[in-house]
Amino acid sequence: MSCRGIRGATSVDANDASAIMAATRELLERIVTANGLAVEELASVIFTVTSDLDAAYPARAAREMGWVSTPLLCMQDMAVEDSLSRCIRVLLHWNTDRPPDEIRHVYLGTARALRPDLVEEEET
Image (tube, rainbow, N blue to C red; front, top):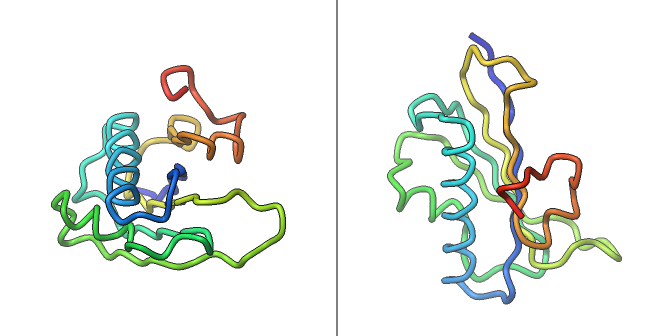
């Protein structure tokens, strides 16, 4: 079994706790569905938010979804000129036998601009 990374990102319209939580839940649900993964197969999850988001920890959404045994970490990105604003990113470390070309990364909202090559039709 290998540990594979699943990337994802989404955006919110405002630095609002409920918006951050809802967007994070949607992103995680889409990643789980797209990959058919079980939460107990996750080794860890790292969340980052852009410097303009500080109203809520995205990891709280994962905990509220029942991800209680998964190690979670939240970090804030550096403030870089011309970077995407109000963006939540996630990197899931997944214990799986699935090969890398079968991993489905999920990008939603304006965060699709980060990796348009990975955006699938149903994610638009």
